[in-house]
Length: 238
Image (cartoon, rainbow, N blue to C red; front, side, top):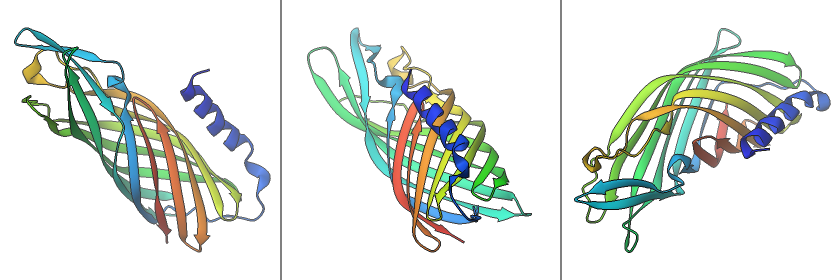
């Protein structure tokens, strides 16, 4: 079973095990959150080759860190508007088989949209979201190379998931989402063109929140896809 399938099974298991906690929970979709984020561009995990002046080079990326911010506003009972933004720096290596040159680039992603939450039980809520997604590769820097690889793309996204109050102060969230801009399609054979545009992907995520104070939670999440990310931060719920 692949890692993605295991994570999906865990998200489903969370949903099926939901009736454990006692007492009705307020799953507010009015919040602000932010913190540290890290990620890895899986599409370039295996070396991708390009040519320049008769020399063939391999390009690889490694995990890097950055930050994220997000928020939502609940209206009309169970509807909500939401937005998310993250910027993560990625390490980059270019090699001709003998010498390796290191560099980096920034991966910037954001999305805005609307969602609806359905309170299934006092401790469980299901939700769905539609969004406009954007992803951008920018500031590609490798010493000795002129990478013209600043590209961005946008498209439609969708998400379905559930939130379960395992206890009054510990909430778990599992979801599956689709995005039109979820992976880097390829490294172009023409060196001057750099990276190609983005392509679609389906991602699986699992989040946890610990409300150590009323309305204030320590949050952590992991999202598995062609671009895999994890984060740690704080959420303020209103």
